[in-house]
Amino acid sequence: MPKISIIGAGNVGSQAAFYSALRGLGDIVLVDVVDGLAAGKALDMLESMPIAGVNSKIIGGSDYALTRDSDIVVVTAGIARKPGMSRHDLIETNSRIMRSVIPEIGKESPESILIVVTNPLDEMVHLAHTLSGFPKQRVLGMAGVLDSVRFRTFIAEELGADVNDVKAMVLGSHGDLMIPLVEYCTVKGEKISNLLSQEKIDVIVERVRKGGVEIVKLLKTGSAFFAPGLSIAAMVEAIIKDQKNIMPCSVLLQGEYGVEDVFIGVPVKLGRNGAEEIIELELNKEERLAFDKSVSQVKTQ
Image (cartoon, rainbow, N blue to C red; front, side):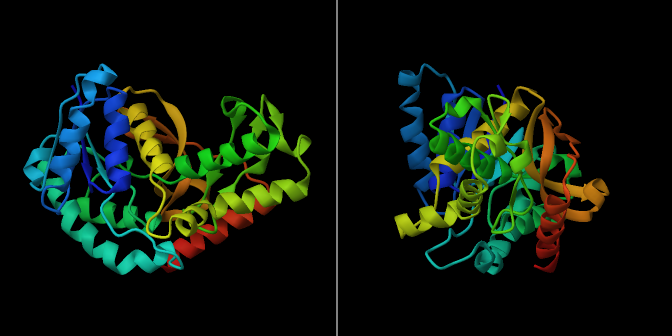
């Protein structure tokens, strides 16, 4: 049975653990520095497995030794945004947390695939890669999957369409400069530019970019966790089951898209070895400029 460890038992981490368990992806380990938090949530999840008909083992605690020999380690640890905060306001505190977490992962699970979710995403996954020394294929950031499903949601809502018929892709940094690729967004194979006015498309694109902020403003005391948690589980499933799914993830570019040594969101083929292939999409002039601007922002942080 594959072993999946999740560092951080807050809302996002616990949802990712629960969804992964419900899908029967493997045995789950939940780790958090807060005494009893991970153990309590893990026990609660474990007691729900008979209803789900799943035999996953789920344990929690504060000791990284519990994570030993994990196949996948997901890092959600870090402070979440409050109203008025940007992802980049979090960089100092969350960098410090990453510096304490990543060496422990490298020690206990040196062959694992690392999925980083902590914000600001692109900067944190780059830091995780540097600290871990893992090959670039085994260090990924979860952002584009979440941003893309938000795009699909808003398109389906506007058109009254089945969400399963909507295909969408979001590239770039996980923030205000993300790039929802309108030309690659379709509903039953039909481009949305043929189904919606440019004005409506622009409104949806802006809502996608502000998707996290919208939820933070509504919650007032936290940030999104259902959609992020399920997005993580989807990535874990693609890797564990060697599905070769194409998903947008923050990965290290070394010449792809004309970019060197920057972690940024692009489509990748996810399989048992992690980011097995970077897919280079053809971008129009406007998308190219937006992508370069997104890369420049990440570089300056």
